[in-house]
Image 1 (tube, rainbow, N blue to C red):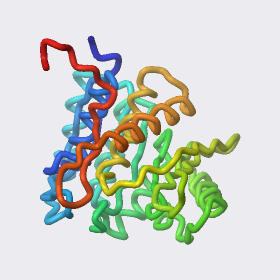
Image 2 (cartoon, rainbow, N blue to C red):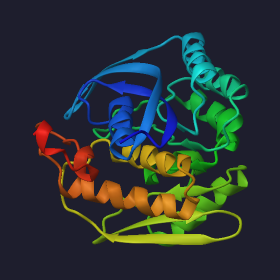
Image 3 (spheres, rainbow, N blue to C red):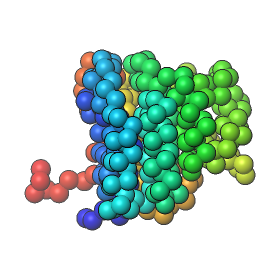
Image 4 (cartoon, helix red, strand yellow):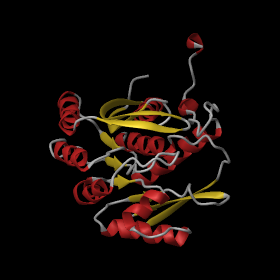
Length: 270
C-alpha cells in the first residue's frame, strides 16, 4: 500500500505517545496518509498528567514548516498545540508561503488531565492571526468556552457558541460535545449555510487521551484525499469512536486510544 496523500502536522510532542504529534502520525499513517511534522514543543507527560512543557523557538518552528513544504508539498495541514503568541505568529507567517487551503486547526488549550497548555495573550493572537486562515476548527466545549466567553451546558449553547466562532471569520466549525454529561455524543458541524449534528452513543471509559488530536488529524487526512468536509468529519468521528471502543487500557490515568483499529496486519508481520 502506498500513501494516498501528504499531511503536514504542526503540533507538540507527547512523550507518552497517546496525544500530540505521536497520535497525529499514528492516525495519518493508519488512514493511509504520509505524515510530516513541525514540532512546536516537547512535553514531559504520561497518562496521569503533564509534568513540563519545553517550547521550541518560534523561528525554528517556521523553518520546519517551510523547509518540509519546499521539498514535499502537503495536501492538507493539521495544527495542534501552539503555546505562545510568538509561535502563533511564526506559524501564521510560514503558512502565508505554503499554498494549502485545507487547514484543520485544533485549538489545544487544556490537557486531558487539566493542565493549561496556552496563555491568555496567545488566545488573543490565535483569534487575530490564525483562526481565519483555517478551513475547519475543531474545539471541544472547554476550548469553545474560552474562545467565545460563554458557558456551554446543552446543545443549544453549543450551536450558539459555534455561531459566535463563525462571526470571528471561521469558515467551518466542528464543536465536539464529549465533555457533556449525556448518554450520547453530539458533535456539531456548522458554517454560514448549514448545520449537521453527528450523534453517537457515548462509550464509558477513562481511556480518551488524544481523542481531539486524533479526530482533527483523521479529518485532515480524509480532506487531503479529496473527500468533502461533511464526509471527512463523519469518517473521522467513526474512526475515533472505534479507537476508543478498542482502547488497549495502558497507563494508570487517562489511557490512549487504539490508533491501529483501521489496520489489518499482514500475516507475515504478525
